[in-house]
Length: 371
Image (cartoon, rainbow, N blue to C red; front, side, top):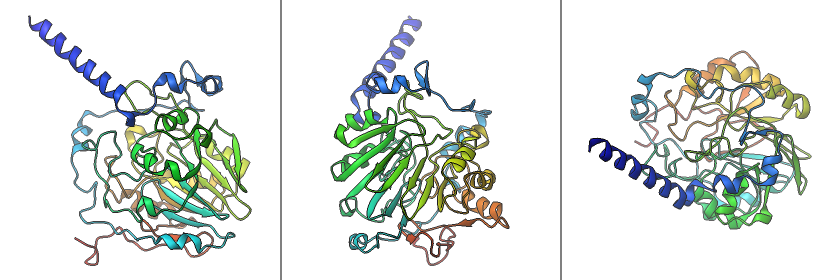
């Protein structure tokens, strides 16, 4: 009798979970929909999954005592509302086409204005990087620099991979009809199509492929990471970094991923870079190979042939065990004396590439910060 009850309970949980996954659009497309002929023909797709260029362990050691740490805030989130600089809609028409402006929206969401176009990278504008609002920690400051409806027409959206903190269902729904083109790694287009994005506006790319849009070239080099939105779709879609080139700028966005040989190959093929947006946050010793540590940033930048950079993947959400300021504190120590220049803008603070870069220590709590 006891065994029967346990079996019924487990079967009910499995059935409920399956129904929830299949009926909730935020999880994206099914694995079957993702497995298009183009995906399955990729040399990076083997035995039903995409593979990193190097052997990559998801976990490099697991400690049971870290599980309860995920549920403690402590210093993993600020105890004050971090500053957000408001963006006025009118400012987007005031930039000379020869200039490039970078605006950080927190975490890995960046708006780049270059060559008269607006390029939005990983537009996660929701409050929680999770398929459901009640799971996961909220944005440190729920205020966005600008309402989504006030954003300019977005010429190109770039997606690095399909994790919830980079590909947000709610944000795509609000943006999709005001975007010219979506460029994404192989398989990610299936998620976009399932959410109503016009298939003619989606270009999926394998590693090293390139596309040109009105004078801007986009290349999708490798990253050392993984993908997946549900319980059974690990590595069904590809992940990548991005090279963004115009006549006046050569920019690199790392996406998520650990250190690897790909950085040098990218630097050799497309460097030197005028500006790099480098993932450095939400790391831990237990997943060393899929996220970059602050101590590894100088070598990665040297490989890329880049001197000026902005750390991303921090400052908006609690997704790891380190203090929320650990990325920036460690980076400042790590790059000291190296000659590297680090831009540290407030969320919403735009700056012109090649001019003075933001350096205010806005993450330090003072009496001037709102309580």
